Length: 196
Image (cartoon, rainbow, N blue to C red; front, side, top):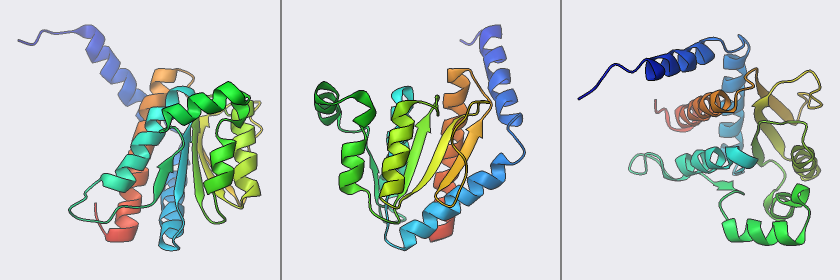
């Protein structure tokens, strides 16, 4: 019952072109990020994920994979998405400014050695800046996935690893971010359990 649909064919070609056109340094950065997360998990630290705006479901999916993926083959890994508590987020946004939305739980739960995984289209937003500042104040490392721009104020340092995407189209950014998150999950499983 299938019919030839040029829209879907073009859509698949665009997605493949986006993946094929990733910056050449990105694969090594993804490997470095996955290995770093695995090392921190071995040292009994946790991952705290934040997806700003439409990236919230991706942060939740990453944490779910760490907790529940291959449950019959490996133990759950400590991961928490700050996007998963809808009632808490509604309460925080009603009583605090939006930039502090993730700071309160991050201050309460983030500990030295933990990893903040932060996903956002706009890495220059106040939400990103305050969330990163809170993570750094808690002596956490940060792995950031988001759009590259000429005005980008985030730099890689001892506490920050940025996986920057040149895509400005939000749909393509979601697809590439999901691909990166799946790669990170695979690297973590391989590092900790020898699983592919």
